[in-house]
Image (cartoon, rainbow, N blue to C red):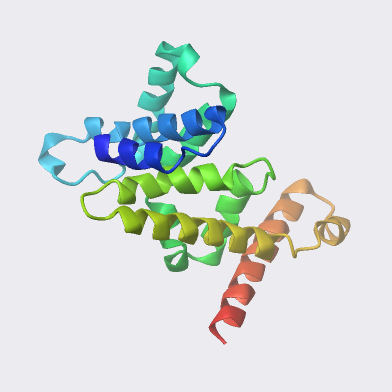
Amino acid sequence: LILALEWAAANTRTLHERDRLAVLVAVLVHDLGKGYTPPEHWPNHHGHEHGGLEPLDSCLARFPGLADNRTRSLARAVTELHLMIRHTDEHRPGTLASLYDQWFRSSSFPVELFALAVAADSGGRLGLSEEGHRIRKQIARAIGFIRCACEQVDVAALRDRHDSIDAFRAALHQARADAIGDARKRNRE
């Protein structure tokens, strides 16, 4: 954790202080879920990402001046996604479409700050500083790819074809998943 924080501190020096603090807080709390792994599962910490959300919320509630809503949101995203987002090429298009809906659709999602915080988890390991830079670029590209593919979907046209909101949502999800799948195929060709 200390090495990850050092990497994050070194690589956020040029950021506005509010953004820098957001990244540092996200790095600080991203692995809280590991503390709740039953000893019989050690040294693995499967599921610590989602399991870390409740301790993260408790920690930030206990120190309310540490994080504003934006920082809290970034910390939650980093905690929940810091392992998954490194392997977007291994996930099905439907999974990526769900990530888009839940996290990346909003233009206010801080992609660069998120990428920096996740990269600190890798770059903060002894001898792997450059790996952090590679991960940061990879994550920013992956989110850009997901956004670009999903934004190709004509939402208004889909809405016009469906009477119920549930049918529309299902069709929209499928259309975004198809757009991601098609974009992947084009990239391979």
